[in-house]
Image (cartoon, rainbow, N blue to C red; front, side):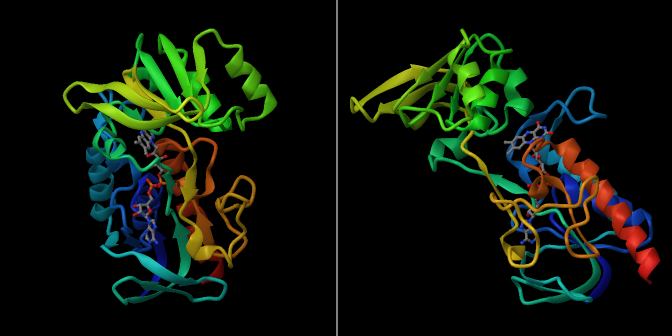
Length: 309
Ligand SMILES: Cc1cc2nc3c(=O)[nH]c(=O)nc-3n(C[C@H](O)[C@H](O)[C@H](O)COP(=O)(O)OP(=O)(O)OC[C@H]3O[C@@H](n4cnc5c(N)ncnc54)[C@H](O)[C@@H]3O)c2cc1C
């Protein structure tokens, strides 16, 4: 199958790119990928996406976006791209089910996956007191005790942000010192609401969907003691993995695997190939910024097609 535009990913970035390119009559094909609807399908209330005064459930928001894209003619392929040859035109893609696709422009919106510790409770209580995003979910936890797991810059930033809401914020770190930059360390260590639990590992999260998170089981790897810490929310802040592995030998990536687009653009180092959303953004990581860059990618792809065909 040959298309003018193929979009990889069905999160806010990919679906926004699909809405714009389909309204521009480019008849895009959007490949769903392994997580239809993207990261927002793993959460409950989304209160910061404009247009939803009362908030919206993450999975509902993604269904609405998909319907909007389909309404204007986006074709959806429920499959995952497993091979990509993008340095020459036409761009060639192969899917998990063996389909061969070609296109003139490619919009990569494959997102990023938050890293987890691997506890069953992280999955069970995600959106019920477990989160990976303080900006997104911090405001749900006012005047209660909150924990953050991690010791890098992101974990420190999340902990500081959460002090706006929480009565107390515990930073659970498995080592004796933080990995974060000196300035972040100072801010955390001097903050009256933050207590760092050194040499500490989160072993379990206790609670239920009805009651939310109630306590955390913490193992101190120095004293070898395990104890329960009462807490109403836990933010896992141990990093994200951008889904860019497919392109690692063809696209410019930073040291953490994020695609590097040109400044103020979604254009990658290859003409006609655009990257939007969390796969190229380690700073904002929000649905609205992903949607914004999805729009940019669509407009840039449309202009490239106009100039080159
Ligand atoms: C628990 C949680 C709660 C959140 N809450 C909020 C919130 O309240 N507000 C907010 O603004 N943001 C929130 N976020 C962040 C927000 O979800 C992300 O910033 C946003 O989803 C990024 O959109 P994206 O389109 O770039 O990528 P994703 O949403 O990560 O989607 C990536 C897409 O790419 C697809 N894909 C991956 N590999 C391939 C492949 N090989 N072939 C084809 N497709 C592929 C996947 O199937 C998926 O559909 C939250 C995130 C999490 C994890």
